[in-house]
Image (cartoon, rainbow, N blue to C red; front, side):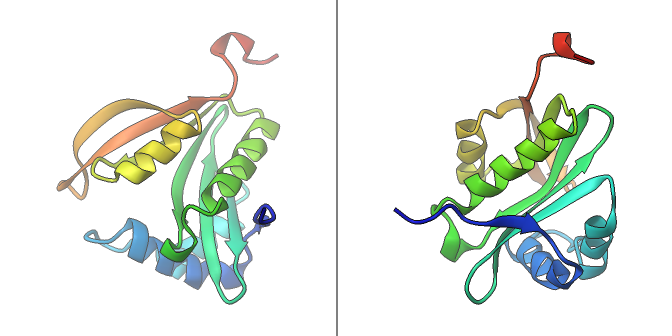
Length: 159
């Protein structure tokens, strides 16, 4: 059985590879917004975590999670096509969820394209529930789905 992928905090030098994966896997058919400069800001932002998995030759996956008082937003999340279905995404998501729990986060929110059945199934398998189908969510053209996962119930807030 292969070893669990190693998830680490991104370095500034990872920004170009993260931006390229975002452009190719997440932002295709949309305006490219997560360019290296924006990713670098996220890496430096104390209110976010940028986690990566590196392969032998290149970065193979990443996740960017932003935090507010008791919620987190998984802003971007991608695994290179050649590394999908090998545990990379699951390892990244578990790492980000542990970080969120440690920070006292109550709920994580994430979005996916409506037609991205693989992503929707992935999040469902990890305990995320679809809340809303939103027409024209992305660039007023592409439908999306908002999902969330509760890490602790609202009744335990502050506990």
